[in-house]
Length: 434
Figure 1 (cartoon, rainbow, N blue to C red):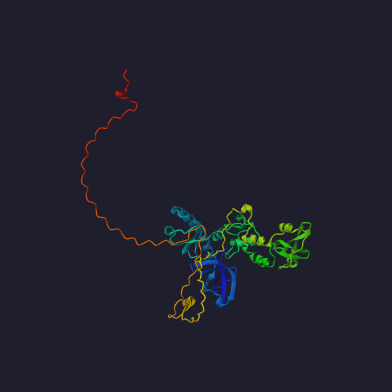
Figure 2: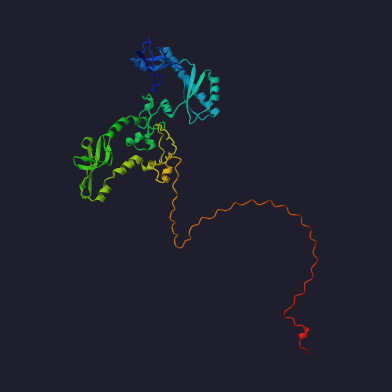
């Protein structure tokens, strides 16, 4: 068995355990402890408690002493120096033009290290900034990138409920919060109503999630048929906080009535005969919701209001693994059934089926091919004939180059063409003499 005390370094930070030794540290005392980054001052939240050795995560560091008045004054002096360091670091970030937002800075108790906390949307190369800050403060500089929830815890503020932020008051660790919690609690999916000051889903959604999950299992779903003291009917609505069920009952003459019953007075129907009503089937389908349709609507989560349908929801803390890509399944070959071997015929020949059977003797001969009757051609069509295969075409022999052509002598000039005869011209010998 070991004795430990729980120490917290921030107002609502994580609880760390130390060995009190003989210091006499009790709950509510300010103590000086040895940590991985040096000496630190914190507040003892829990007194000395005995725990099993298997429950301790080594190494268990000791408590040096209970803080004195000088230690408290030194802590206040460091707080004043942190304000000046914050202003100087902010100026250096602007000079280096780095995409980062400085949140706070902190001196260790022994002034051996100066820590700066910042937020950024991406990774930042701050090596030049560290060298510049080390030349100004002459101590070891350490820059840590934190998330938006840690920023809200350090800065503090008021939530939409009007009270201080839970993370800055009593929350020790951040638990994952998913959008499924808001849907199970029938909350509006408007991002301005379910997101906190950090822009993420509110931590208080996780407070009542266990009760909602436990109670919803014991209540019937919307659209299911149930039996009540006043008759059978489908479930129209459920109230998890009051643990009541609203059932739609038929009053005859196409009239229905909604009544609320405690869960103890409602019994689920597991497949009995449908309730007999006086109204026709068409009117019954219009009034009573189809259980399959209601189940499909809940599966597709169609409860988003119209005015909020186009608004982006805050990010979900529950990380979902990406689906694995599986290779397409290959079709297995169809197994051929083994054909039974047949005894050889009297003449020593074997059938064609026996010759294809695995393990058949090599001496067996295949059966003679049987001639199949040719089908007569259809009327009006020529019988199909296979085209003859083209004979092998021999490659032509190479052609010898042509002999040079002798020059041709120029032709003699052509005789002049006879003048064209006029058809309306009458020669003189044919003219009548007067």
